[in-house]
Image 1 (cartoon, rainbow, N blue to C red):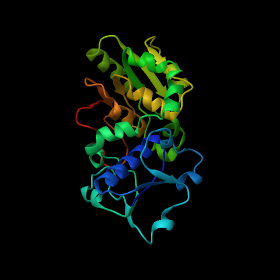
Image 2: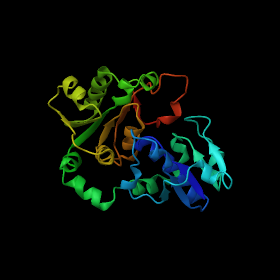
Image 3: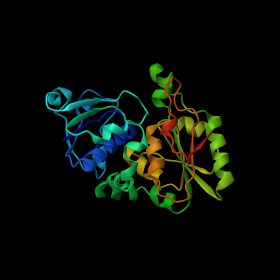
Length: 268
């Protein structure tokens, strides 16, 4: 049995699930997602339920339920790949596991797992954004502000990307891509509308987090923030000639995040 503690926003949830899914397949183990952290969280919600994931879920577990029968595996080296973890069985995984080496071998499986369930996909189609994105040289721009601006503790580590970063990223894309059409996703669209004046930008409104994930991943190219949310959208992007622009500086502390960014992404 592989039990994964699920916590944080959708991007973090996807990293946690991805490791658990890989371990369950590699070791022929049942996968259970421990959703109990969301009993105490009002800022975040469990969003994996909108996708076609392969796992059992429950709010009733928690570490105390399992600790007598399972090996407790706490992440100690954030962003670093600890290969030996993949061989564990009957364990409880507690961490963020933000390194694609944990699940790169099952990339195609994860792309299927992170497909929206049919009823949610139909609702997304009705919003018309998907058709626009699929029929143009679309580029997603993800602007993470929210807690990066309002929460002092978070903002010391994750600073919101500057307007200069996005301007330079747009310029870089335009140097590679003809007739690029930009689609902006953000938790602070008012800021984006006030700062990004180009007529070539569509601001995506009235969408859920899981819908935005699918829309961004369907864009031909991606400009991401220092956010696991847009990281996953770029990683799931199937366009063979995709160009991914990401910030050179991911965190503003002593942790080394070099291994987080795939080698073919462009850092600016």
